[in-house]
Length: 186
Image (cartoon, rainbow, N blue to C red; front, side):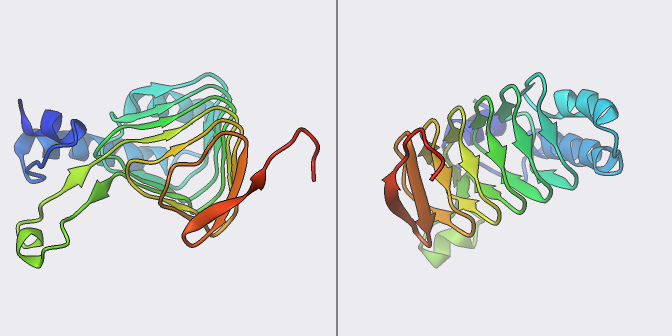
């Protein structure tokens, strides 16, 4: 198993490995072009090259940042506002009809609490899943290993550290359950 495969499998990996660095460098080069391109029709082919999957009708507003790109899947009709950041050492899967506010950060990576292990830049990554029809407000941080259930809403300025059940409103730091969502708009 190579270092990139270890990374996406959630195992400890060498982030300075040449294979890992090659994927990272390719993503960085694509993003340099992507973030200078303002017309969505011109951005879409670049996004399809950057991501593992980029769905029909989806939009990513510049600037956008990720580390690898090839670990990200975005469904159909999803909108990501400006300044989204993805540390995508594990998969980030975003469903259909998702709205993501500006300055939202996705963190699949974590480091040991033991300072001696951190000295070696030890990293482990766990996936993030955003199910269909989710709305994530602006300035939200989503930590590793999280699933946000379908049709849920995450309030602006929240830090999501636990899974979110479908049809739920969560908010705060750390984000907590506020209430179950109903079909009306209150």
